[in-house]
Length: 116
Image 1: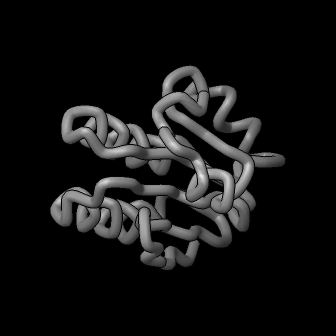
Image 2: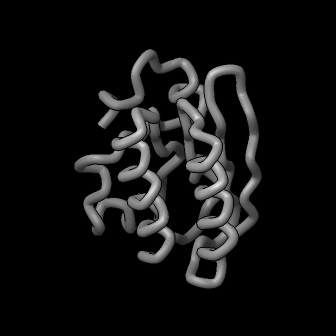
């Protein structure tokens, strides 16, 4: 998985590409924790180019979601499809983590917290 951090006027977007597995967790976690320390106001993680996700990667997403909830940060996932969507549904993250089809949808949303 190759993470890329992109700064937009109203958000930080972490774009992921490839397989998000146990081997990629340390780098992904480092990038996510950097955003925690930076106290970004809106973070979007884009999974549109991800072909596979396993549970440790979802654990990093949950870690940030918990941080965001306490810090007043808006947070959402985008581009969840195919095998990634199946994994997302199995772990039931869609029940509480906002998710939208595209980064553009997330960037234009007035409030990410109501996008479940």
